[in-house]
Amino acid sequence: MTRLLSKDEPIPYDLLLLADEFVEVIDKYIFDSEIYVYEEGDRIIALYALYKIDSEEAEIKNIAVDSEYQNKGIGKVLLNEATARAKEKGFKTLAIGTGDAMMIQLQLYQKAGFEMDMIKKNFYLDNYPTPIYENGLRLKHMVVLKKKLDR
Ligand code: ACO
Image 1 (cartoon, rainbow, N blue to C red):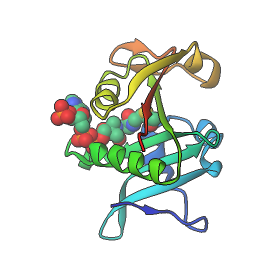
Image 2 (image 1 turned 90 degrees about the horizontal axis):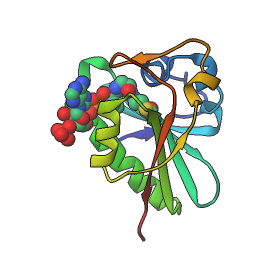
Image 3 (image 1 turned 120 degrees about the vertical axis):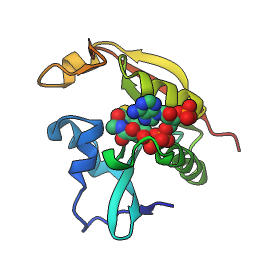
């Protein structure tokens, strides 16, 4: 289970930077997000940032698992937990966005019940200071996936 990081605790940029490569991009959403952290002992090893878009919709702006702990099922647990939290808070839809070349993430989110909803064209060209390459492809567009939160 995760806990909400309090406002007076340091923001775990080391983890956030695994999902989003630039602090200046993270800073556009992180101060308006709730950060839920997953700990082993007193060490934060994973997190997600939940951002309110409007009264109906929330978005997971960032999800990251420490590289030592990846591919052990924690990401899946966090996605399910974020879904439950967003539902509990009364949102009707939960969104998550990722790059067009992020194959593992696109698969993981669809397996967790998110469906492709729209493309933010040129998002990575317009919002990031330098090119980002993933799986040998330059990230260009953001794929936004959404999940309906049935009551
Ligand atoms: N290679 C192949 N498959 C993988 C890998 C990998 N490196 N990592 C995860 N998977 C697959 C698993 O096999 C599993 O598939 P299955 O359900 O068919 O068994 C599925 O993805 C879920 O795996 P988890 O172990 O739950 O995923 P994990 O704990 O590693 O979390 C995450 C996934 C968050 C993407 C993590 O790997 C990570 O932090 N990566 C770096 C940061 C990142 O890319 N964050 C997302 C950016 S988009 C955003 O933040 C909105």
